Image (tube, rainbow, N blue to C red; front, side, top):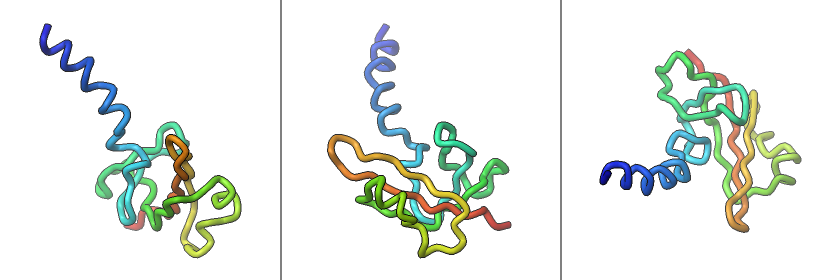
Length: 100
């Protein structure tokens, strides 16, 4: 019964923090996934690794994203934008291919 209570209390925090979600990604880390819904951070040695984070641009709006914020990184093959939470600006990830 105690374990169930702990799981119920801890689960929302683990989901909210989303330790493998794009919100936790930093420059140099690798990511796997081909859509917004399945993008997640992984070890660069993971065979699923598809992307390397070339840059993380914090405090950005969707307008910044639409205006080519990753233009300074010519190796950018894809980008990701996430809105901020609770009236905060979001962030943009500039993603390049994982190089062997």
